[in-house]
Length: 393
View 1 (cartoon, one colour):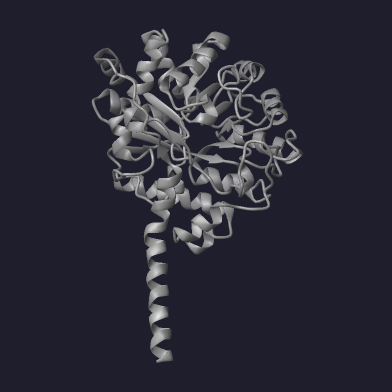
View 2: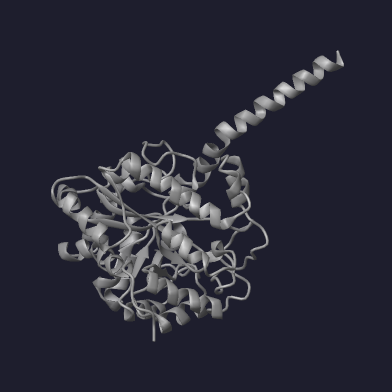
């Protein structure tokens, strides 16, 4: 009798375990990456027609974090290849997220805890990724490599400026091809060794932010405890990024970190995803002084679609933030940075980007300005930024 009970309990435990690993990751993502269900704005035929002629670039999504095939249309999250094509996206930057603290908030976090490790284990990622932040990023690169190999006619990986030129030739020839470029959300994945930057570059990464939600060996985070500037290692890494052809992203950096990067930058810097204090007074967002600093490097500011960036999920709020940047420093510094699939709630997914085109038209943006803001500026900065350069003298 006792043996039968033990066998039954063991079977139940096995079924529960299998159910968790089969359905748990999808349930978690569905809960974290939401579309809020509020009414969308009405899109005119004029906006639809213009939208189909754009070369749209999104500077940030976290799709690679989740256990699903980006080549298949999903019923959860915000981004996959079919929906990118529906939204007429030319280039999507996929970020590698490797660590985030428990109780994550915008004000103060340490790096002592990690929410990503349970997700990594629960998604049954390779064992090497369970304890290594570097291997988590290398795994994300492998996932993209496999997708590109399977869809080589319509998904192009971007390593250099010639890849962007090839992508644009294909699209101008009538193809609906999408470019994919790898980025990093926080260089804590260097695991304290600047030499690991070379491994990441060799694996395809062409952009990186120094910090995420906590301070690390390179710099202080806007959401960290000390919130300091660049360390000696951080300065070394920024210089090496520019030499290799990796765009420097200031998203999540502390004000001191942002100021230090702007002061030493020899190439345009990027704020990949966020907002502006002038339209949404959240510490996550850029002050006018910081906006001017990014513009002084020739850089761009990607505006996101979630409440932390624009204080709600309305595409009109996205357009207002973009208008502020335009009016302050010029249209050439405006870009998109959705943070899709980044544990955020948005009003729409990537298939519905006509929402932003319409909102920009309603804000009085000209056709030329919309082309620049929706992707033209980003293509210019990225094309130059991912090419190697000579070391500083």
